[in-house]
Image (tube, rainbow, N blue to C red; front, side, top):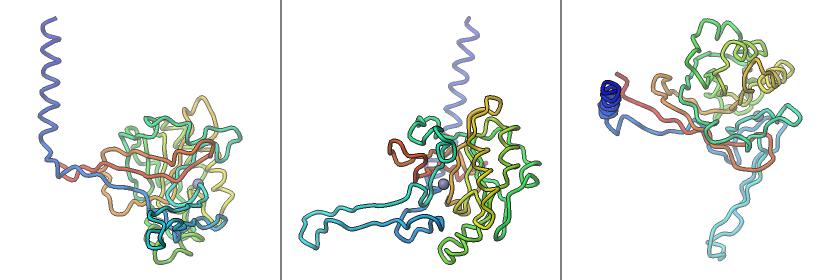
Length: 254
Ligand SMILES: [Zn+2]
């Protein structure tokens, strides 16, 4: 009995020492999502967001207020099963702890226009200890300067890749990408299949995946990424929602 108590004390002390080994400045929060604005590039079939300055202090209203009109797949957003599955789970049905990921990684899979993330890109990667997998294609560099290219030539992901991930790594609950959609604009059919495969219910494959699109991954080093929390707009009944993706970084890797 005594030994067990001693063991417990030891564990606590070790934890404390670990916490003190990083100064506060090494830890930082950042966002992996873009600001939503009227100029946000949105999928070609969607209406552009509108942000109307409704009440205005300079106009004599005495206060500011805005009216925001946006499609729910605008800007950085998270797709839930209800997007492609009739009666599927909607994003507001997820509990906050289902939207926190303690083992996220960014996988660099550099892709040019209209290319596809394939099995070869993931097969050799050890994804055993991963709960959230962000694909960095590098296509994000076109978002500001060449929005038309960003929207009409985006790389996508093959249905086989999504299927393989679900079959082999049921611990992965979320995929993300730095392109406007997981679905290539020029090649929509496989993109649609990839979504359906991600979202379909199958007991053997664990929970359906969540998909985050139009992410801001920048130059963040995957080894600095400690955890990620996704905060979708809290709106009842909609399939998916624009979201803020908060990441905690540890900038001092020993
Ligand atoms: Zn979407």
